[in-house]
Image (cartoon, rainbow, N blue to C red; front, side, top):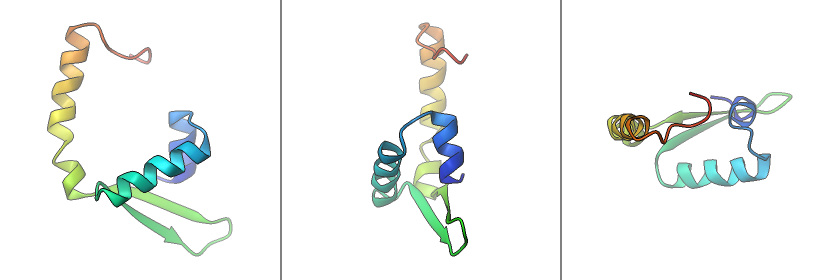
Length: 74
């Protein structure tokens, strides 16, 4: 996803998002691709390491839903 898409979807301040994305990239969970365009474009994609976590997040989602811990968007 593009930075702007993440920012609008997550409704998080740009400085906070930038910090979190840098941390996830440093941890090897995201790959970052910057394009030499005007305006600048940066895209993030989950790495294999991150994709390996998807099943665990799926189980956590089911657990949260079962125990009524789901987010307001559901």
